[in-house]
Length: 224
Image (cartoon, rainbow, N blue to C red; front, side, top):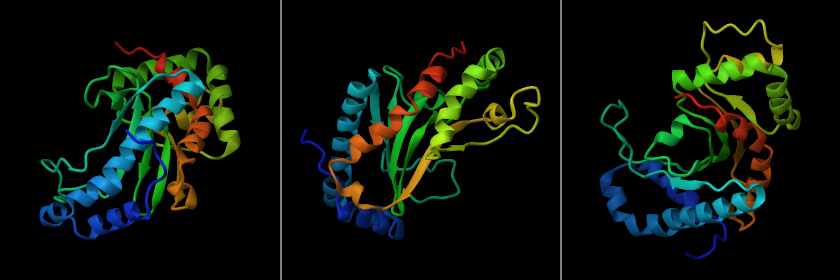
């Protein structure tokens, strides 16, 4: 596989056009274009960032790129294709979509821009119980980890909250993390020149290095 040299301006054009023409007929007419401007560069990016992240952190991870087709069986939105594309770096040997229940890094490109970060996107109740117990046992350890992330003000905590989880006995800065039903930290950026540069993977790796202590904290949680 050739090395990643940057996404193409046509990558963004393609995503905009797909959003406006989301049909099988349009995709059939643009299938080869899809491979050239979206699928191939995304696969190249994914391979490079996975290798670079392992070299920078010692964390060897598998990567998985989203499919262009949407699962519309249970959705009111019957648009057959996604007008965005993402890659996840996940723990090795996780099958299928099991990565959603474990900490993982992600990078996504959409017509408007890109976003990236790390978290647990579909945490199970068992995982969340173990997560909250770990925080309760040593709240200062957790506070020190997330404090370093919040200090840089690049990543924002996202996710849905439980309404009935009480964090009043913990330091107040832990509360927003403790009550989450699913959670991830994310940085969102508009389209900018770095997207079209071979330097993009290295820039993202440098940012992800700040998330590694939190990733390892979450990875150590066992919920069996």
